[in-house]
Image (cartoon, rainbow, N blue to C red; front, side, top):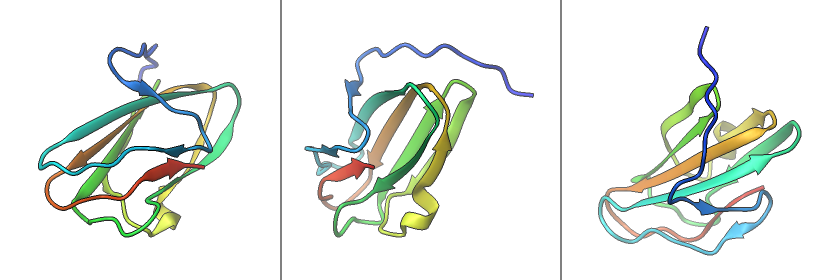
Length: 106
C-alpha cells in the first residue's frame, strides 16, 4: 500500500477549482506548476479550453503520490475526469513544442 504524504506548496501558483487559469504555455520544455486544496470529495475535470497541442502533458500529485503521469492535455475530456478526496494537490503542465490556449479546472 502507498504512503500518505503531507504536501506543502513551495513555488507553485495557487488555483481555484472551477476557474479558468489565465495562463498559457508557449516555450519549448516550459513547465507550469499549480496547486489547489479540496475541503471535501470532488469530481474534477481538467479541460484544455480550446485547440491544444498534443505536445502538452499534465501530471497530478496528491497525498498518496502521483495520480496522473505525463497524460496528454487534449480535448478528450473523458480521460481527464478525476474523483479526488480532501487534500492539497499539485498540477504540473509540461510542454515540448507548439503553443497552447488557456486551460481550466472545473
